Length: 115
Image 1 (spheres, helix red, strand yellow):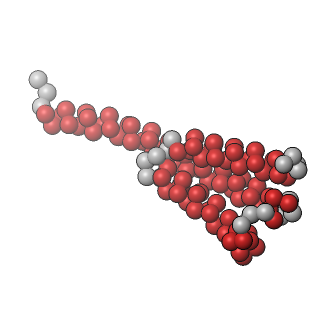
Image 2 (spheres, rainbow, N blue to C red):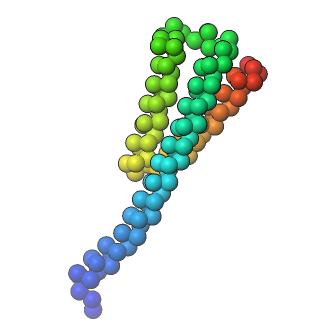
Image 3 (cartoon, one colour):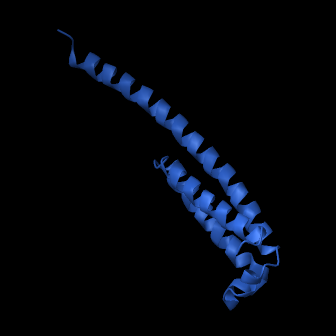
């Protein structure tokens, strides 16, 4: 019969293997969210500089600081996604991917003047 100390040691080894896989998953999620965030900022800036008539129809507070208030909001969304992914929510990368896809669709519609 094995001693209880050996059982604890075996349990610790199993947990460490899972921890290493989760740490890798979290790092990959953070990298994916960061790269998607760069794309979101690029699309957002392109839309702001497009001169599309829809940009003129947004509320007055959006025009403060030349529309940079919307970039601040974009940054806060990115920061929240990165912080959540770094603190044990790596699945949030899928949600941020969906958000980025919707941003991409909206940017494409605006930049190609389909709306």
